[in-house]
Length: 111
Image 1 (cartoon, helix red, strand yellow):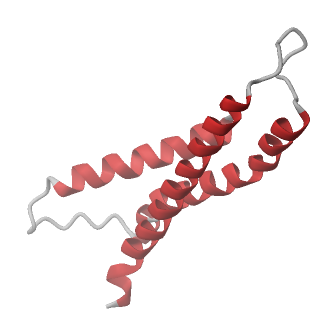
Image 2: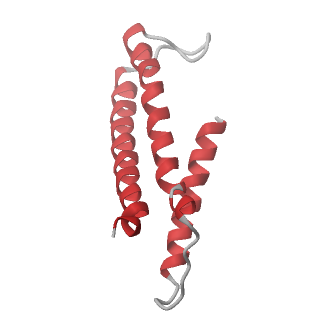
């Protein structure tokens, strides 16, 4: 739980920082440093890895009919299909965000 909250906060902070920085005029120099530019991609990459690490538990839940509580009935196959689709979309989004953000964090350093 705490890792997801920290990762989400990092994504939110990085996104808001980008939005606020885009409102500055070109003459303003708002270079907060290389490490500040890594918050967004590092958060996206951490959430990507965390999602990959919990994927086997989701697969086990599907293949073994695991339930979330003693009094809960087994989950329908459509629930697992929707969760799998959402997880693939989330992984794709986080990987694209991490790759693009890492490139832009290094972009000025490569010139």
